[in-house]
Image (cartoon, rainbow, N blue to C red):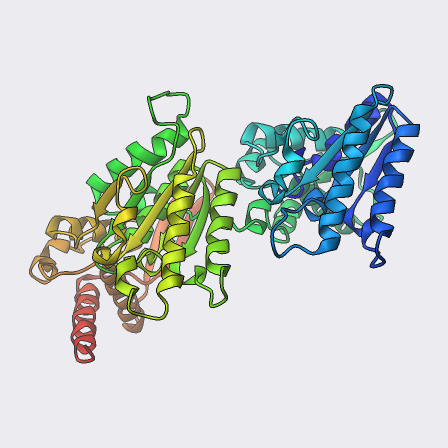
Length: 508
């Protein structure tokens, strides 16, 4: 049984196996057994196994086997059960005949949806799981694509391997195919000798440029995005001012186990659960984004209310899918924002009509967290503004192991946040942040300080004063016209934030 995301090479592996052994392949796909008439589909399965037996040795390849052998339950249709029974009967019949050599290979994207009777020893004895290729694997795939094509890569293959995190082999093949089509379209029918390199004495190969590659990359969504994962945000630790203690804890318990898995620590093979709580705008989501980028893990971002569904059982199904993906493509960080919306105390709703729905969601969440086994590097992070309503069963060690407060920054922290914001921004050299010590003693969050910077930028642009910035480079002097933020502009920005806060208090 081959399992893994689409495009990771399951079908290709079967074709390679058949080619190396010089064996015929007999395909059993769901669209071939979609006849509505009773008994015909089972007959097709039986005939296929008989033909494969007569051509022994041979290979039977069952693609998307989860559609044929889906788990039996009370809601299953009779024809689905009949297909499953016929498939199991045909497999058992072949295995009992010692004079026949037939290799039966199944492929699925959803291993957990297969019926247990199919996965037992004696039917499918071996299960091979395909994962998202690592950097070294992607590099080998790209080198293989170059050596077996009529194109030469006029870009850094190693750099492309680093930038294609989350791409499966099918995505890489599609990327190079689209880039090569752009190359052919750009060159047209004109053969310019300087644009080619010799493959053999009389043969030439096209050069795929970086420009063609960039255009192709904009047209492709990597395999992880198609499977419910999110893009990794480009946020580093250096982009976060203050919160040093929390950053140390997150580095120790998440980043280091992912980046340095060879450092074996007792009872550290399993992921960890962390709850971040604090006022809105203090940097909980920003911290998680930086952790994801620094660790290089796969990322699933879930806004709590998005999981909830009015139809019976759909909310629990959504949670199961999230954890199933995470365990299949580990290491993975699951981040539940607004965690209190899906993990509220069950006793809070005992008097209401929605009690059973809330209870089922919390129970499913407890079950999925407990199902993370040793060796599965799945890290669970929740963020909330209301930790007092989180169900106590989730807060025990083994589920949520660390509870970290993210408070309002102190005065020193506010200065660090402003310095981080202004680090990559052009501002007047005599901008003195110490002049704002009195104003910053109020409870400013990181989000409000960022808003103050935006207000200061707008105020600077309205002043009508432009500055010429001169920089020396190898080819000469480079001149840039820019708007610079000064003390007066920042004072205006902070004052605007204080005014907005007073206006909001009028509606509370």
